[in-house]
Each structure stands twice: as structure tokens, then as C-alpha cells.
Length: 132
Image (cartoon, rainbow, N blue to C red; front, side, top):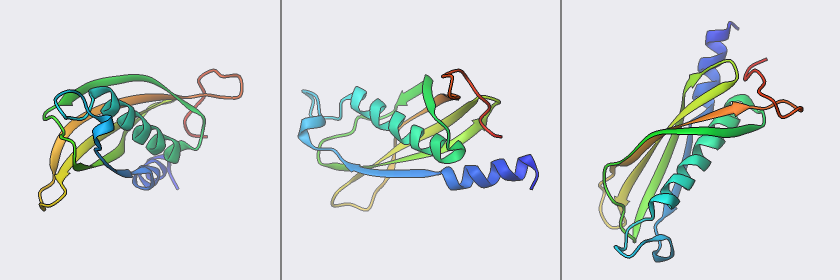
């Protein structure tokens, strides 16, 4: 299997979906999800996708352009979808979308999106190749 085929196969396997409910303990004074909570959930979903891709120790090195298109009210269901979008020599960039849906309606739409970059670490805690 060539490198491109291997990367495509691993990317498909690494897609991660996490579903959560937004309860009042996770909301601010506007009764909407705290932005920091959303970021933490996104980083976690991205970390899982990146780990599933390379099966190596990883650290988050950046989050890029997180767009809060819509606030997420308490009492809704959210689905985080994380997909590996770029593989470098020692880094992996994962795009994460948060979709929101009301508990008693069939609508689901994107509310937040952003990208997270991770670096693979070797036993010496220094960057190491993602593949190989």
C-alpha cells in the first residue's frame, strides 16, 4: 500500500463522532453553552481523531479559526464531528464541527467549527514522524 492510500485509509478510520447534551451546569448566565466548554470538547474530539490516525502520543500545539456561528442553548443535543484534514511530517490538523439539534425537533445544523493541530511525540518527548 502506497503512502497516499495509507493516509486515506487512516483518515477514514479516524473520523470521530461524539454526542453530548447541554445541561445547565455547562452554561453561562445567558443559559447557553460556555465557549470554553465547547473548545474543550472540540479539542478532546480532535485529539481522539488524531490518536486514531497515528496511534502515537500527541500534544495540542494550536487551535485555528474557531467560528462560533451560533450560541448553543441549554437543553439541546450536540454532535461533534472530528476529521483529520492534513498530515504533515510530525503534525496532524483536525477539523471539528459542532452540530446542534433541539431535543424535540428533527433539525440539526452547524453551530461551531474550528481546526486543531497536534504534534506527535517520541519517547524523548520531542517531535517524531506521524507515520512510520
